[in-house]
Length: 240
Image 1 (tube, one colour):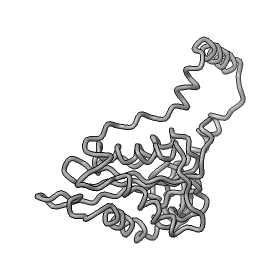
Image 2 (cartoon, helix red, strand yellow; image 1 turned 45 degrees about the vertical axis):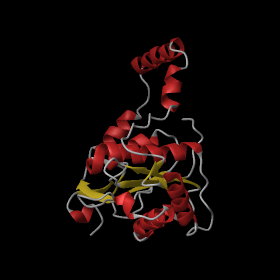
Image 3 (spheres, rainbow, N blue to C red; image 1 turned 90 degrees about the horizontal axis):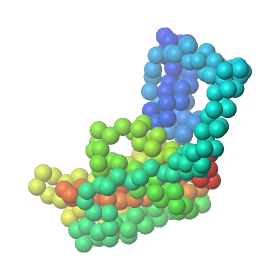
Image 4 (cartoon, helix red, strand yellow; image 1 turned 120 degrees about the vertical axis):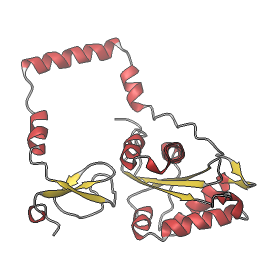
């Protein structure tokens, strides 16, 4: 039973952005995420949200005045800070070449493979490219324990509009380096594409025409494991 009322006081929360809905009806209306988690119904949430939108009192107006003055005194710092994407983590390993294979060539082939399944090809936009780089570096640094929700929040700071992302890892055995098991860039890209497009949920958002921009990023960790991230987005203006 999907209705919260029929589920004994539960509702559904997007695992990426936290948006809640009474029905299990992916994708998420806020971020397009496909994973919804059953959580206890928060009956006081709407009250809190309503209170946060209450009319201004004299004290509130004074507070806004002080904040406005601080923004003027601080010059453009607050605007600059809000519009500056997060710094990409310094991930160990290789971002350009590994095992004699050009990782840029792998990235191009992964994106080309996704575009081959779409009616309109994804355009590479600067902030989307950087978001994909961030997603990969974050995953290498944090490992599989890294929070998808935290990463979603970080990617939101790139101001790329509505977006979705997916990450995959090609791992070798204890005594072998995964990247060395591939003959060339095409073989690595093909392995990633089989994994990505073979997942119906992932394929659905990668080929969704609401997303006009996209980028793939590939990184090889010191142990030879190959990491890939693909970000698709509706596109942002870069402003709040």
